Image (cartoon, rainbow, N blue to C red; front, top):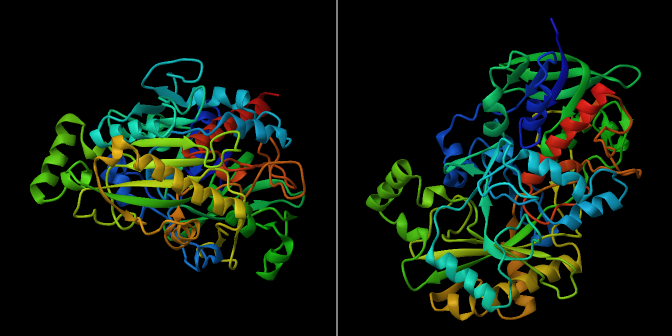
Length: 533
């Protein structure tokens, strides 16, 4: 027998968790939340530094892009969370909203209600800010936001060096202005990860009207002859199952899974769907297109003193002490996220706002999740904040278990290439300033011999990677390429909304987890408004 719900939310990630939590606050409303991954029981999820393990584990979808022309034909690993909490359970924990101008631009594109002043209340409603409440931050929300606990000499030296290089000090990237250098804040509370699942689901798991099913891979949306949503088909525990809906369905699978599910359900570029034997419910050419991502290049420095985390974990006894420090005092390297210090800067002097971001991390390795270097090392990466390059995500066939084709199209424009090169040069200006240079033994990557624009661009192409911020594959808008409207309702059908990073018209100028949570909060608010009209 098919179970019937008022709302079905597909994907328990950064946006899906707040949607399900807010909608189920009304005990008269039945809500089903479907998540393809398992429960968030792994202890490595909840220890902040655990991201270094989980991001390349079975808790990730482990997508790979197609060979990318802009990066010398390399294929890139794209980790996306496949677990309760989605990517918020495996990400680097940095809490960043982007720039005021990002959201004002969304509004200028015709998306009423998405300007900065419109979205700020939803950021504040989500937040439990360790520093207290002000006009930019809230304290009554479920999402813990905390300062970095482990302050390090080498991090302070980098901040001072940035100031020597002309970068202003900024102690709140989510406040009055983004530009500057300072410590990041993280989505942690008491030195434990505060994922969207911890924040929004854990406190309400006992609600009788909220049903959460993990290990549930949704295969397609179901519509009636009038293109009104009727339910979903999904696979769980080795069996095909179906759930019906009397209200609305919210697709919150993220920038990869959401367009994939829509295409499998007959919503997408008509010719492409028909070529795979899928009946077209609505020809929506923008589904899967307009893909944007932040691309980064990492510089590695060897220090002349034991000042990095590499030194803290070099040897069994030191690793044991690191674990004990965390267990007893909630301090040390295990409290780390994917960045200690950030810089938001203008790589190009003509930019009105910061166009590049630096992540400074007091450890180094050859690759994500790899063994730390045997020497005392740090990593400083540069990413472009507003890429012009556009890619796409398209299904390869009608099989829901088949990963889609991801074509990122990195570095496809002169602007994107120039930002990366100029960003690395700006970063070098910082690392060669006296406060930091005194601790440097040598620049290992790319090395001092890489000293021209051409050589730096080759380094970017040959070694750069994603920084895990794909967006905009179901973007909101009013034009023919738009997939949802400003209230996140899917064009061409009735009863479906999309709420995740895929609806962003453009990628925000910073990490995307906080904006995704905001989108979930705003989506639930709009749905509750509609229900009470």
